[in-house]
Amino acid sequence: MNNLINTELQYLALCLSTLFALVNPLGITPIFVAMTDKYSSEDRIKIAKKGIITGSIVLIIFTFLGSIIFQLYGITIEAFQIMGGIIFFRSGLRMLDAKVGRSRTTESEREEFKESDEIAISPIGVPLITGPGAITGVLILSGKMPSDYSFAILLLAVIITMVIFYIILRTGNFLSKRIGLTGMRVIERMMGLILMVIAVQFVINGVETIINRL
Image (tube, rainbow, N blue to C red; front, top):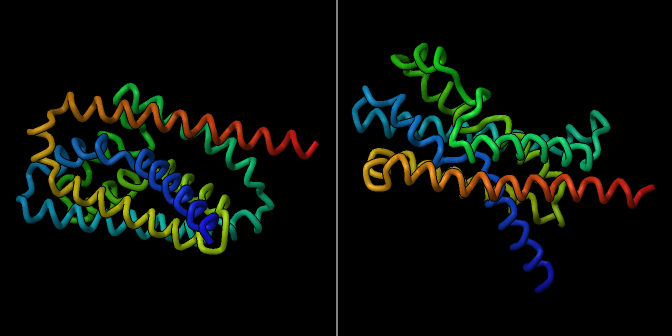
C-alpha cells in the first residue's frame, strides 16, 4: 500500500511539474494582460475564467482519448515520448529566450479577437492557455500511468494546474506590478530549463526502452 502511495505521489509530482511548465502561466500572463488591457477588471476576470474552462476541457478530452489514440493508430508510447521530448525541448528553449511560440498566437490573431467576446475561447483558451505542448504532455502522461488509480491523479493534476493558472491570470496586473516584467521573465527561464531537462529524460527513457527490446 505504501509503495502504491509513493508511486502515485511521484506520478502526481511528474504531472504537475510537466503540465505547469508546458502551460507556462507566468510567461502567458503578460500577454493576457496586454490582450485585455481595454477591458474592465470584471470583464478581465470573466475572460480569464472562460479561457481557463476552455483550456481545461481540451486537456481533459485529450486525457480521456490518450490511450484510445495509441490503440487506434498503433502508436507506441516510446515513439510519442521521443517526439514529445523534442517538442518539449523546443518549448523550453523558447522559454529560455523568454519568447512565446507561434503555435500559441500571432499578432494578427490578437488584433482580430481584441474587441470580441470570443477572445476568451480563442486565442486565449486555445491555443494560448492550452497549446500543442500541453496537449502532447497529457497524451504522454496518460500513456505512462503506473496503475489504474493514475488516471484520477492525472485529472487532478490538470485541475490543480488550471486552478493555479486562473489565480495567476486573475492577479495578472498585480503580479506584473509587483514582480515586474523582468522578474516574470526570469521565472519563465527557470521553468524553461526544467522543461528541457524533462524533455531530455523523456527521450532517454524512450530510447532505452527501444534498445532493451532489441
